[in-house]
Length: 71
Image (tube, rainbow, N blue to C red; front, side, top):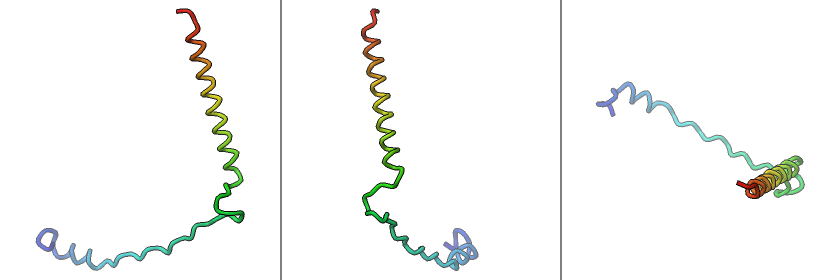
């Protein structure tokens, strides 16, 4: 190491002690239990499912209408 980078760089890097790891944070759980979703998550999930079903049905209807048209 001293031949490649010089003694000052090596000694400066050796002098810095490693940082200690922060203490682990315990996972927070809601009061009602670990598997209960938060207040707004259920509504957002249902809204997403409804929107995707609506778009899928619209795509199926458009494809069926396009297939039935005369060429």
